Length: 489
Ligand SMILES: [Zn+2]
Picture 1 (cartoon, rainbow, N blue to C red):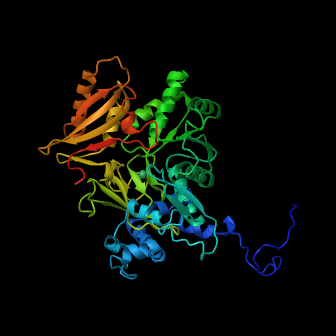
Picture 2 (picture 1 turned 180 degrees about the vertical axis):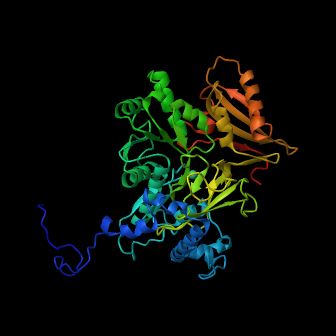
Picture 3 (picture 1 turned 120 degrees about the vertical axis):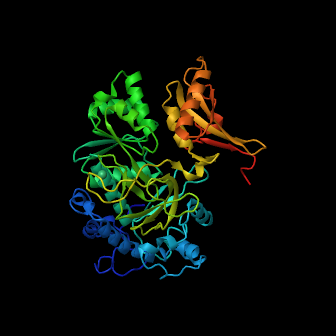
């Protein structure tokens, strides 16, 4: 049937050519007052000519103002009405950002509970297609290792603030107009690659080269591209950036240091920065972000810790047991409060990530925003072994430095009837025919030094840990197997 422009089949809404009625289909550029947005959240390079150097008092005043607006919005969201209401909280109880600690926190378990009732327009999103004005929305998800991935919906303003912050982070880490940024994160349901592309494209002046993971563009082809196009920056997971360098060096006979990469933009956590920098002959920068909120903190070129973007977030670091604020230098779990989100505002979201506040104030870059050191691991992965907190991630970082291992590992936790708990770190060897007792002995010593508690080490054949870690089946790899007798009690 030929296309016939007519009003037939459309809901009646006055004269379509009359000009007085608002378009019913939302338009992205009209959905936002960009000038007002840029005033509120200045992008680079404007951001670095004033707002970046705000004093603590100025930052706190901005946070307070934005926090109260965010609370007002959160009270419209069914999840918070229920979560706060059942704790006896009422609108008006919270009078300033100083009252933050009075608000009950929540975690990913609460998000999952909301998704069980409604798998897409969950109660934490706060948007109802039946009653809300249409607006341009997009969805990105978590990794989804157990069950379906968790959807997070973004309005234009939510998204643009996240893009501006990506732009700021890239500027801090040396990205400039006409640079090429080679991105090895995949473009799909998860947010990482898509968000990187938007931020680079819209707020850095650089050009995103979306190579994707090795599954999308084979690693050798990625090296060919880098040789030909000469990007200045690489974005990716540290393990993959390391793999790329080794493919270049060992398989293609290309010294990665000859490729002209200046910056490696990654979430480093406890990964070995020095070895990555040495491989590429480039600076590696740390960043902390999540699917729900984008980048929350990142390093500047001085590498003095991750500066929190405090005009967009209130970050807390709270003691793992008491959940009271941790002093600088002491480890605690991150709670995040967003100051800009319309869809799914996050108020005291327990990220389950463990970090500590940097012990020094300020940075040579001129910011007074607070800094976190690095992410030590996930608190739900943390093990208390004979009084010492142990993170499998930290063990992995040490195993990856061992040249006789391929870096694969899993921590097995067991207890005997007397209640003594022991951990065995199982690792895979690189060469199946090499003797294993010396690598086991050396690693036992190194781990004891690094962790402050004794663990056993057992070396096994390549691929033998697969059934335990799920390496070949899933993207989220299991590094801890808990076989303690009383573990479930
Ligand atoms: Zn700095």
